[in-house]
Image (tube, rainbow, N blue to C red; front, side, top):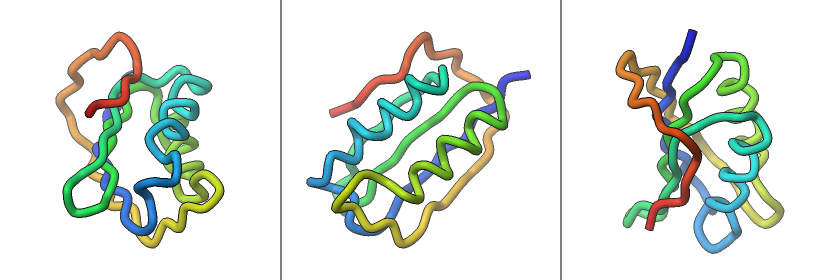
Length: 91
């Protein structure tokens, strides 16, 4: 069964390679979706895939890349699956 998590990552997460890190994590786990910077200095991401793989991705996002400092991740589990074919960085 496919799941979807919509997350907002807070802290020092822009200018520290966070979007590319998130894409690498998603690609390594076979997740689809997207990631982008927000004007409020947070990072927003959507993961679609198996629940345990999404949980693993979120756990890796808490650690983040070097120089990042995650203070909070807001997670919303959503029922609507869009069926993305890959994981992309949005600009």
